[in-house]
Length: 170
Picture 1 (cartoon, rainbow, N blue to C red):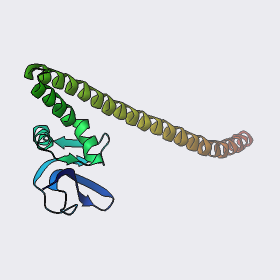
Picture 2: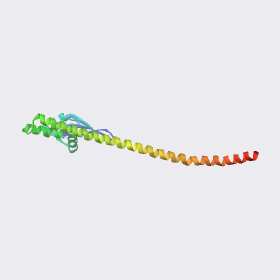
Picture 3: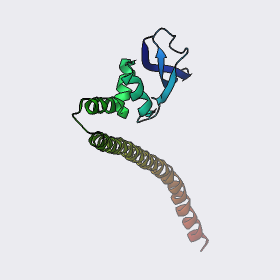
Picture 4: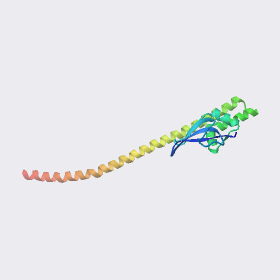
């Protein structure tokens, strides 16, 4: 039975949400699956990927073939690297401790990159809000300035007339 690691679509129209599953290659896209390995939400920025890395590595070692998109997601979360390191341990090129140290170092570096992107996005969003607020204040001040001289001119026209009337009364 050929097994594929692939995406199973869920969510509503225009808002996809995917499960990462190990399924028989002959089953339908959204049909029966052997094991759910994780979830992928492309609607968030950065995209959210939850994955059982150990389960994915187990399926890869048993011969499951990931689809192109699933392979990208497995690489993003480190399952492909962990499978590669496990192959090195089996061949004797690495010890289990060395492989685990390399994997944790890679995970820390990846988390730092993801956090940097999230921080950059939040900074850009805050800057965009501040710019929008400044532009709105400028428009409001211009609107107030345009309305204020009209009121002042009427008041200044009435003031000399009142001053003349008071001078005539004296």
